[in-house]
Image (cartoon, rainbow, N blue to C red):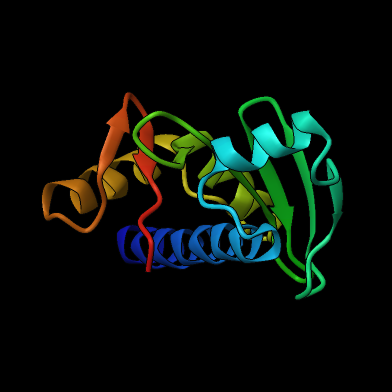
Length: 133
């Protein structure tokens, strides 16, 4: 399961990065806080379709992007950057049709390993930054 978990985590993180890039390109804004702020000001719609056909909706401190044929990528903003949690990653896999989805503990072990070798930056307990590609 370890190799499978590593592969699934890497592919899922790539999808989170793509979702973030699509949102930023759509609105000409950088970061979830800027997008949420623009929605609250009424400058951009709270939900809709992106140019690539993905659907999005803005909520709380972030947004969710639902790509056709893929899962729901939930991204939150913070004062140190946009991030996702191990639970967001698990939900993305579940909504992408991964069966079985690795246990939270297995996903967290992979994420921690990636953080330890510098491929990912930890943002708090069970939270990780989405790097710009």
